[in-house]
Length: 263
Image (cartoon, rainbow, N blue to C red; front, side, top):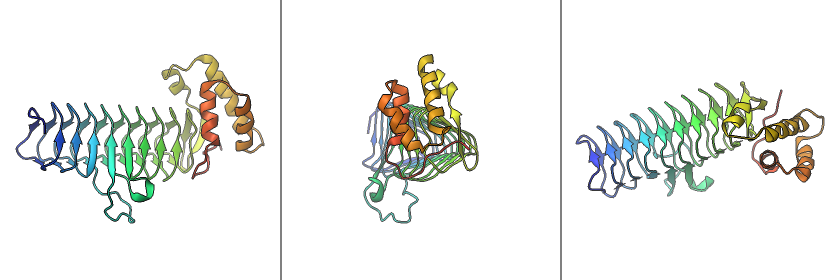
């Protein structure tokens, strides 16, 4: 434990926990023996951080968050598992994040610079990229893979084993049962693909030519009568634009869930 860590006297930090330089732990927290907090992590109060959990430097954990406690999987038998959270993450009130299970690789990963807003949930064995935003009450079920810079609107829910590509946007209250392509925009319950996330493209600095190429590829994939996989394979053979290749590779990759498509 760092000698300059500031721990409120009402909190419990179990022997064995590793606290980096500048860590601050507010009142009525419980930090487990296997927990590792990076430099300048702040736990504001009344939070529980347990298990083999690592939280990267500069992250902040707000009251009533439950981080690293046993996964909500009835097959869990106490096996060794872990939760890895990146740097500069914002973990707001009531957030729950679970470690992995032996059936899913044993680890849950959340990238850097993520914002998990109040009462959102990241289940066991999920893999979240960096810059992901979970608005209030978002529910990510087990074994999901989420790309970088995905934004989830409030109250949206993602079915287990689903994939969401980088820079996608999931609308508020959407119930997503299928995979969402990179830069895709999914809305509704049950969710359907409602075009490309053009605002996300512009924010990501995507060049106009690439945006036009992506729109053309989207039409070729989803507006014709051919199976999406066949159309994607043909497009991939001739495509050179990196962003379009990203979308096509996502479509062509093996998956546990069907692809989210337009109505």
